[in-house]
Length: 248
Ligand SMILES: Nc1ncnc2c1ncn2[C@@H]1O[C@H](COP(=O)(O)OP(=O)(O)O)[C@@H](O)[C@H]1O
Ligand SMILES: [Mg+2]
Image 1 (cartoon, helix red, strand yellow):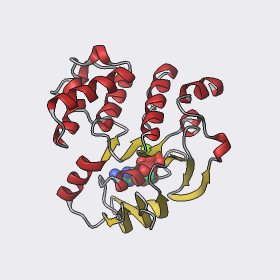
Image 2: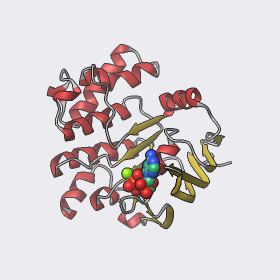
Image 3: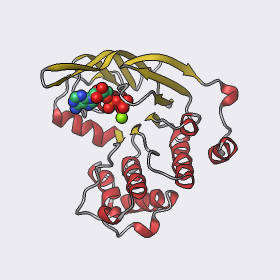
Image 4: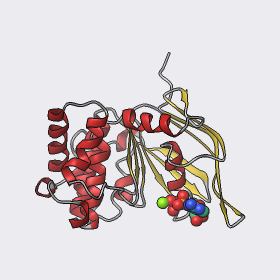
């Protein structure tokens, strides 16, 4: 028997209420993501991308429909069960970073690994690796407020990857980055993907989407296109950065 999909959304709907006026943000999304897939979610501003990934990570409640993670029903879980699930297997990069203000960069990145049960040494080594990959080694002792927006964004990614989540959900993780830092992030995402982690990533950036196995396009809260990128277009191991440069 093949393993259940990592993510399975069934007729997922989110309707916000805005002063009594219903605002449909996600309108009946069906999405199945198998283990190890790298999925880019694209679409114009307001098409429901953030709402969708927030629901998949339990950060927002659905109006109707179902969410299954690794074959287990998740949309019916309460806050604390979701928190546990995120600690164990979901890394989340928010659009607005959500770093802990009164902790150093190093502590922000180590915290999820420590909460997930890593030893202090494992957490430190993982943090050193991630900050190194993202060009942030010399910012380890800074506090988030001392960082530029693009630096905060990279720290948020490092934090999301600290406990090697089996599922990475990232909302525009390169939105504030220049091309060099975008390349660092893409290299790291390529590494995560090669390690077999599942990645679902919202992006406006065609370079980022070109890394994915599959591109899902949203419009007005519905999936309007869902295409697998053929095997011939898959880059060989370890050259994500080169592809980015070629397509620059
Ligand atoms: N908290 C909220 N309250 C009311 N409406 C919201 C809220 N969050 C998002 N929306 C609305 O839902 C729709 C989808 O938003 P969003 O998921 O943020 O889109 P995207 O990430 O694709 O830009 C938009 O019309 C937006 O205005
Ligand atoms: Mg958004």
